[in-house]
Image (tube, rainbow, N blue to C red; front, top):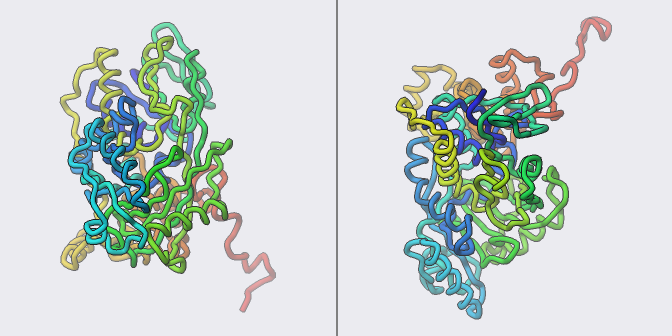
Length: 486
């Protein structure tokens, strides 16, 4: 019998896995798709929120502020890029001053340090490209940005190095209480475990409602985004928010740690938990409101668009811990924004709760350090020469837009919980995330996946499931077509 099964391989599930590996426990994480970080965690605004926006007294407020304080040490241990670039919540009318004051007071109650309202002169000195109607702003010094998919991969890799087992393509179809624990069934395997963690994101309601009469329901909320080319990396320093509404934090314009610029998200309640399409209406709204912050957005330099779904629950808060009628079943449900920021604190809280209930001892061999894949694009010429001398695959650039080499792609596949799809490579190395959006590097990426995993090109997918990229022979066989062809 296992000690703990975690259901869900997003940033929350992987953070919990890493924290559980600090204890002497047998832990298995089950992810229903081909890879970790395939849901909410791959499609968000990548912000380390300060914590001013959450209603005081909520789990969101508590874990946002706690998680924010953990980020520097966690990212240092896991070698994950982050930047403390501040956040600004911009009002576009002096009549909204009272709303900024309300956010200031709310943030102070939540324990957010050093918040202050800045006037138009300081706002423009900080951000000279802000829209002409910008009046004043709430300055959030503890705001930052992070790479969400690298953080998720880092949590997973470090957890695996410290003994956690991962199984992908393992959708959970039932959870049931048994004497002494829980029975967790997938389509092709049944597991028995002392404790269960429900970190199933958009489907966390389905898992919870299998075992508890204290039901909750997830209503997916879609957010649509634009990504702008790296040539505009310096257009804004801070993450530029607009005064929030009941539907979210508004349309923001934010730099990323990788140098691109995000515009979005919208907020649309939908019924389908798999509907991640973008729409003309949603993208138009992102541009219309985004233009308040960034006038004359350079539409010719959009790289791509995408959408993500948030797991908004009818509880309107994070749902954490054991239901009264399901001991040793631990929820991490309804985790929407600020879930990414809160992930280190949620992981720590639930892991310590579980270890305490199971009477688990500390794992004295736990190693908190994980090193990232060395990035050729960030090396000096001297560092590049040394890298190539050590591994000649660093001399073979696969993705020209992002300067990603064959060495990086091979390592992304070979690592613990390594890449198995083209998108898995993309999220771990940025191959395919640049200006041409994988137009040139996809064929070689497929070849490398085939070589490393001993697969045929027809078995390689973009993002798992039926997203196959190659069908049949790419070129017709000359002999079958009637002999040699000129």
